[in-house]
Amino acid sequence: MTTQQDIGDAAATAEDPYAAIGELGTAPLWRYYGSVLPKQPEPRAVPYLWRYAALRPYLLRFLEELSLEEAERRVLMLLNPALQDPPATTTTLYAGLQIIGPGETAQAHRHTSNAFRYVIEGSGAYTTVNGERVHMHPGDLLLTPNWHWHDHYHEGDDPMVWLDALDYPLTTNCLDVNFFELYGERSQKSSVPDDLSSRQFIHGQLSPAWEVAHTEASPVGNYPWAETRRAFDAIADDAVGTEAEGILLEYKNPITGGPVLPTMGCRVSRLRPGFRGAAVRRTSSAIYHVVHGSGVAQVGDVQLDWNEKDVFAVPPWHRFELRNDSDTEDAFLFSFTNEPVLRALGFFREDLPDASGAS
Ligand code: GTQ
Image (cartoon, rainbow, N blue to C red):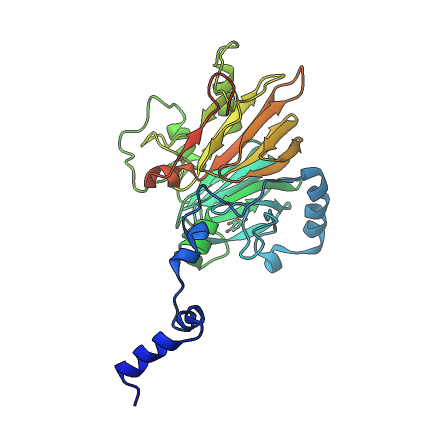
């Protein structure tokens, strides 16, 4: 029989006490300060850019070769080179490019993860979200908040492509809280007038008083590009905007005034010709989609040259500087971040260079 005394003796005489405590499922903190308490964030994700012009032909090829009965969703996940398994675009955010062809349906399901779509090309598709058909046009932002049923249907003539965004790297890879369920039928029936939520809330200062917040998420199904465009047009030509991202507009939850989803905030910015942003550093991570124009993002040591419809990832705590190199054309960038999560938990930090230009 092993006594307490024997165990004490073994510990006192063990040739390699580090190996011995390892066998007992422990590790010495004093050898792990660098990984447990780094001086500053050391994200595994790297700055990276996905070229739309290179990916689009493959989307079209899979449209030809793979049915939605087989694929369920025909999506090319945008994987950060440092986050292949489990797959993710940044540590807590995911983006993918989804293509759907005329007449196709992507079957109804729901999941814990919040999601949204940002439409890149095509028209004639809609997503049904908890019984509301939400129609898509290029530049529209469509929400499918946590645990909302959603299926996609395309009744147009040309392929449709959109950017998918989900917070599953947070819910699945970090927190292990994701549930997923298929709907009983392939598609939901329409149960309210099409696009009702967007039409009800579009007037901004006059919102329906009986609509109260049921969840953290915005009740708006679609934030259409036509409204985004009007919002930009209403801003004075000489407005300075933000130092880092120019004329920056934030998509709002009309009930709370907060971000559109509890885990992901969405913005769109207009960079005037020749715009050069201040080099900002934030604890949030971000994914950008180029709506229009071309330019440069310097992210830490990496220079990303972006063109129309490209997507790029900005990991936390990298110095980030945006430029519109055109002398004549505005650039428009759609972006989303995990800032709402960080703000809710008190972890958001932002560091702009001081006015002298020193960082
Ligand atoms: O369209 O519902 O890119 O559930 C990943 C998971 C898209 C979708 C994705 C999804 C969807």
